[in-house]
Amino acid sequence: MAPLYPFGEKMHTQPKMAAWQKSSFCNGASSCVEVAPLADGNVALRDSKEQDGPILVFTPAEWAAFTAGVRDGEFELEALTAGA
Image (tube, rainbow, N blue to C red):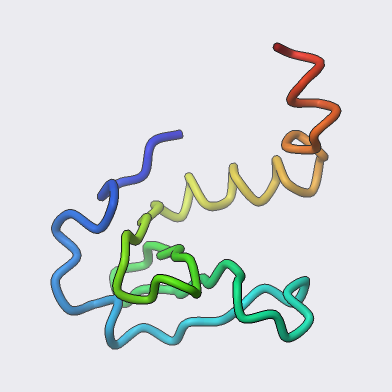
C-alpha cells in the first residue's frame, strides 16, 4: 500500500493546520506516531520527534486496510518473520 503523497509531496499547508493526535499506546512518550484527519478526507501520519519531517498521507481506503491489518495481527513481528 503506497501512500498517496510519499514523504509529504504536494502537502503544502494542510498538515500544519491538522489536528495531530498521538497513539494511546504512547503512554506519554515523546517519541511516537501521530495521526491526523485531513480536510480532504485523507489521513496523515508522522513521527512526533520530526514534526517538520516527512508526512505520509493515505486515502480513506488505504487507512482502513492498514488499521484492519493492525487489528488482525498482520504486522506482528512473528507474522512478518514467518513470511520472510
